[in-house]
Length: 183
Image 1 (cartoon, rainbow, N blue to C red):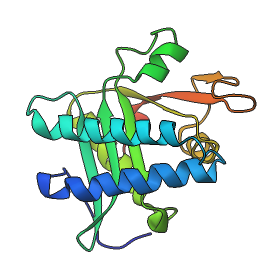
Image 2 (tube, helix red, strand yellow):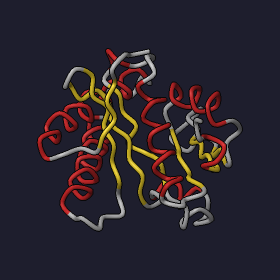
Image 3 (cartoon, helix red, strand yellow):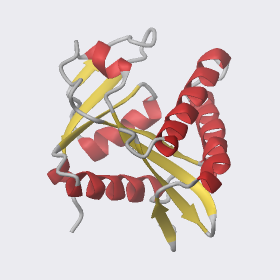
Image 4 (cartoon, helix red, strand yellow):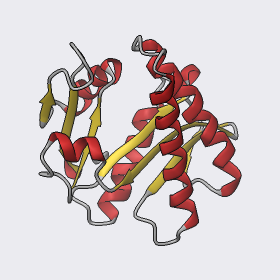
């Protein structure tokens, strides 16, 4: 567990560091999944995350909410909450389209496995609770992330077999905020 981790809303001064997290962590995730050759998909994912962050900062009434984690003034992780994404809509035939999605959880590789992601999730869940939001969904096609989410969030709401290709399933969770509030 990292000591003195600061969770806060990003500012314009944090944008460049957050972009670097997207570039590093997304590329790393694809590499570790054996998908590093999918350069166009990696670029598209990074570009989309940058767009979401920019949208959250540019519009005061944005429906996208971001948090960042800092260790000694270095941005080491991100998380977002916003409208349900296209993969979730498609995979659930729009059953969850009115449920907000927890996403953009990316941690710099050197900080992974040290509680940064859990701290970001806990902070986001506390924010959702204060906003009166009672549930959220999340998804993953990354096998490594799926293992973590199965431990943290339990049985998925839906598993779409071979969504990303042979033996590459897509998992979607539907969670109650109350179940993840830390006292």
